[in-house]
Length: 344
Image 1: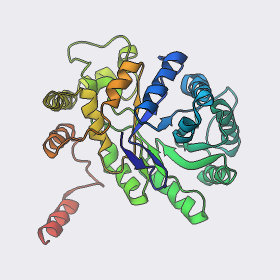
Image 2: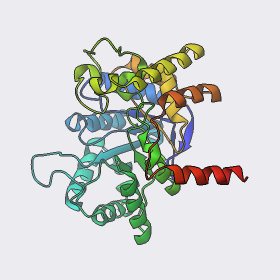
Image 3: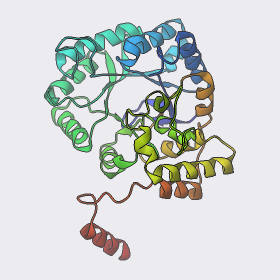
Image 4: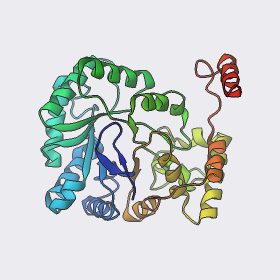
């Protein structure tokens, strides 16, 4: 396992992060605990959850595991959780208001059986709550010792920049990470979000690095998936919906490129896909999520795997989402870029 700084902080975390959205759903408590034990044994330190995973059960399972773990394990594990989405039926049981976050944070601390959460992330943008209210609450929570670092999740480039600017202007705790959807089939955030993270020193924690299983090679163009996988259970839902992905030739070009690299390396396609995203600019730790120990073991095989220039170039070409167009590019930008680079 390799280790990296958690964004602009001095906290060190493993380059692979154990995502726990499956805990309490696809993985029962015994299976979840087995995953946590295997992850730590492999050198993993960063564990990510949220207060809405499996109806709060994911946090509760982690809390019970932490309470029974040896002291050295508890000291090394870095716990990240998130809040924003509904935790009840009331009008204030969701969002990023001071009222909701204060209750959500205390509830997460109880379930996780912790005094302090290492990385507390706002799960998504809230268009109704003033951002100043959210950031001020998070800063107060840091000062109170309830959280150590602030993170963002599913923010756009301008939302991220606004959050950083406000925090810096007021002297509040500045976000150190962003958790976005990022993989070989989903690279559009490279147009604006990745540059915003680079400019502000935020570490990226990619979720769905295997694109809902697409990058493992399990899906075929002539066979609609069924069974135990995110796409198989609901082929019509989410960013990785089967009809949407399968209709794009780029999807199958990317899968073929991943398979080519995997065969040449003698590793799994999942390991190649994880290695590619782990070495993208500004990525701190890649969130892996498994339904069982076998899947986790395969994913952990990506630890320390680095692709060479030729392999990376092959994957980059196949997965290129195409020109972003105005305002990210265009003739004026391209002409000036050529003129400047040509004069060096």
